[in-house]
Length: 239
Image (cartoon, rainbow, N blue to C red; front, side, top):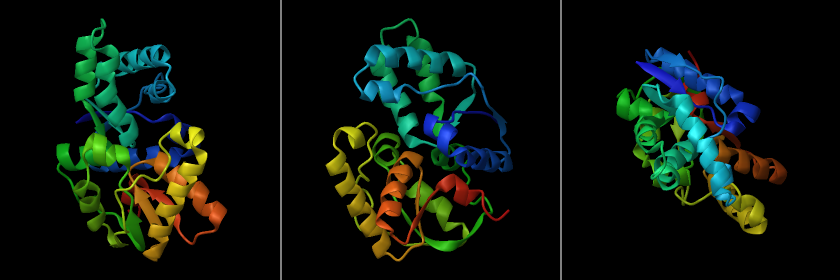
């Protein structure tokens, strides 16, 4: 199976190990992984900031970069959710309408692809730790994954998963929301971090590094005894 990967901006610049971990897992699952070095952004930051025209240009580039891909897989439910739910709003009546539909239908979040397309829930990982899982808004509400990441994590040897209170509540990041409404964003991060540390877990796991980046900043500033880790890094451990 040929898989073209899309690496989000913040993972490319700040957390490249997440991308490498995803490739490692996909290749172990038997996929041929391809990376188009011309790729840039999905267009979501500009869209959220109100620059729809500029976002449309970036979205058009994304479509042209991936039009020949059999599958497009990304370690970010936020980016995938944007492609699925907002590309039609931006490009529905454009010259790229048909191409947009093709690309949208071939785009998958990493965990979703592993469980729903490859039908794999055990990758042979070992990660000896206790952890709690954060359901990102994009993963839960835009991509529709809830049990899928937990199925994968339940098969990881040595990992004990402990559910936190209000695990479906937003972490407070929300892209530009964290900048425009900083006090509210910080309060939401505090609530999430408190619920996570109350479980006594060593790690917070999620499908979205954007959420984890936001929580990690708050956790370090508050000196909470918990770390964050992307699910791809967990699944690529212990081989």
